[in-house]
Image (cartoon, rainbow, N blue to C red; front, top):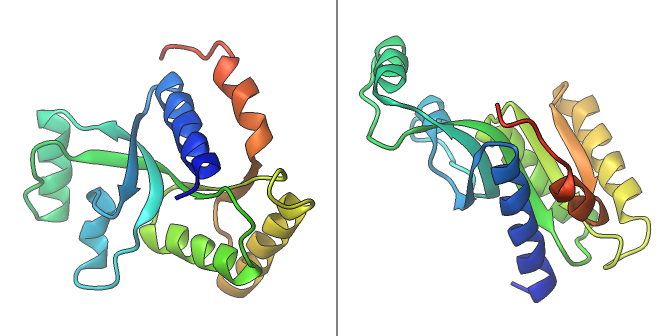
Length: 157
């Protein structure tokens, strides 16, 4: 992984924590894996989630008919990061991973520093996948926005 991509990961961890989430990298295991059974379980670059305390974990486990392991968390935002110059096919695979992960919200982070107009291309990829497979709650994010988002005073609740 290139240093520019590592830097983006670090910024996204900071932003996730500032928003009150637990931020984890390289995630394929979450509460959502229960719905995938033995199917392909995508590995996404980052997951922002909320930890589940004992009563919440028991309630969700009861509703799903499965016992949840200690440390389970509720996935909220899945993130794929492209810090270099990905092909359109690579970005489409990122979108597919986020859709398969089943996160309520997905972010595809791209960097104009690596390629001019990549944000527009990422938005087109997302739009194309939506047309083919239905509405996905997925947003493109340009990497240069992250420092300003991190520096904002976010509510603590």
